[in-house]
Length: 424
Image (cartoon, rainbow, N blue to C red):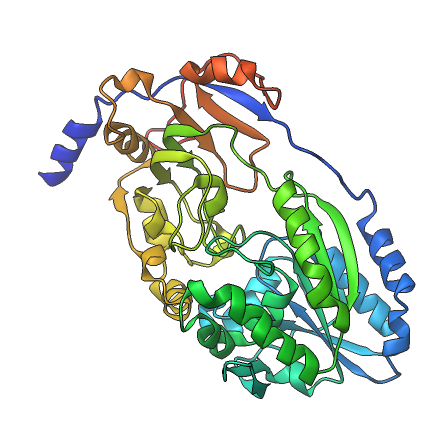
């Protein structure tokens, strides 16, 4: 009887026709990622840091960075050419269910396979404490990385989804939290995100000082999820150079060119997209008070969780509605360690679960607090990485046409649902 009541409440809610819109952003792009990496490593003479037989741990994280397997393969080849013996360590804090096998599977799922990159993955959750920060916090590092003769950090630099500072998501965070594994992540998060901007560099500089980090590869992506810059930094350059890379990353970040919406539909979220499943900066929804900005959106529905997220539904709790399909993918054991470590339970709460895509969309429209539902300001995106093309309701056409950054690329059409009420 309860489902019949929900059907009765939602079935009459009109869903607007939409048009496809192309958004344009600044688009610097590397046409030869492999060649650029080789050039940058050669310019820094990394071979001088590596001696024959030297074991080198490459720290690689859980994000779906474009060309990450190619970059890792290039670093592996350079280490081998210098006579070193490279291997991969998952540098991802509590991701992958905070298990060694889960973290290894995440890397393999992103294309970091031994047969492609040329080096094995050695995964453990064990850490070694190498010192204390100025505040007395223990500084952990992955046991296999610690035992290696050298360490290389590989990561994208981008804005964080929960706090602001000169070091957000990037190289220093990977040193502190990624290589710190669950223990290091737990310590860094213990006092909340209000202390993160301080704790990340405070712990990171101790790890850099006390371990044999050889160099770091910093990757920047443009708004089209394309690699646009690669920097190779020696260990003593990381703290000085990363804030500048962070500022450039913020300038290049994608966005939605609307300041206010009634409804946003996100087809998918996942750990491969963002630590919180989606870019909170783009959606204007945050799980901490230490970040702000973005559009004002009354209701947000998410329809699915990516397969690469391996059941980690982190981020669902920040949004309003989801589908039974996404809920069925939600694995507590993969998701909760992330929230328990970050000390932010909000992000893993379960939003209202509807039987299909159509109802998840209609529920957002019904509850967006406008009298005339046919005038809903409505946008649909695939995820917060792929926003080159989006769908917007017809009543936003005037704003689209006035913007130098958007153009209409289709005639109006109705969203197409299958017999189960899910979008094609």
